[in-house]
Image (cartoon, rainbow, N blue to C red):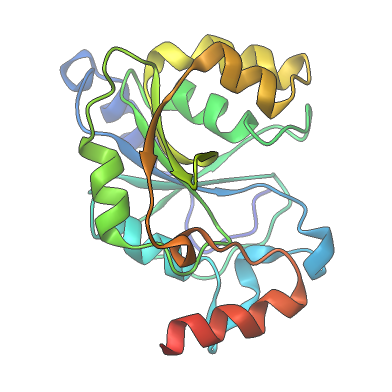
Length: 212
């Protein structure tokens, strides 16, 4: 059983699956299913400036979109949440893009705007730009820094679902997925926004960035 103070909103999921909502605004998605081994596990609850790490990208996402979900593994503990749905992805297969694939299946024909749980400096401005950017007919628009795509920060259309599901189940590399997906890239000038807290030492760096 998912251990969290907020249960998934079945009514919200059914509403998003309604044909009336197909092609509507994106559903915001915080990716929180990773094991977080380098930081001791339980990354959503890791404290940064006395606040759970999850709260930072969640706050930024809420500044852009009304419907926001956190997707996580069945046994992941989450901090107290207000006004966000909790979606659960299966334990297997383990792949960085599984959460996005599962979320597209739950979003009822709407795109998903995704961001990892470990990016405390991401801004509403960047998320807003990704939410509204033209895709030029491509199935996704993702952030990039110095020409390097960041596939876990971007907007994915329903047309990307089949490829992402295949990638997860066939354990395709990120490079293989990018070659097939050919997403539109949105260059990010301030690389601090894409800084990820991957290990305990990164918490000090992240705290310094937030203090600036």
